Amino acid sequence: MKKSLIDHISTFIYRRIKHTEIMSRNMCKPETIILSHIAKRVMFFANQKMIEDSVMRLGISADDVVIEIGSGNGQALAEIKTYYPAKIYAVEISEEFRKDLRSRFKGEKITIIGNDASDLADVIPDKTVNKILLINVIYFLDPLDTYLEEFKRILKPDGVVFFACRFGSVG
Image (tube, rainbow, N blue to C red):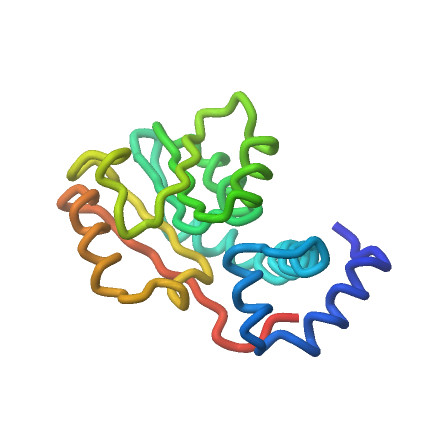
């Protein structure tokens, strides 16, 4: 997708506020219309190659149950779908992102969950998941041990957790 004038303006603004607390909060859970738009567009343009590579590396098969933690705008979910897994879960704490996901994937076999990923007990049974994908989410998992214990609980014995991260600046 080609960048529009609005996308270029969003990138310009993002570069000036990317390391601020307000931008970090909006990347995780959009709060304002302008910063929400900036977060969504930056994610869209900055992550596509990493998403394609990460999903390919997961080695998803048709009988897999796959969870994406922090699904955001749904880019990775769209890529996961191309592998036709048995079941897909999207765990997203932001109501705004969940609204977008429900709209984008309406009628598809993706279960959208609003829980924090540290507590999925009421929605995902023990030892039922083959693959867990987290893209640019590790920064928000605090304390990390709590999340890892929950992932261990829901993963099958041969399950895989894949963290993909951009540690450099986006934009």
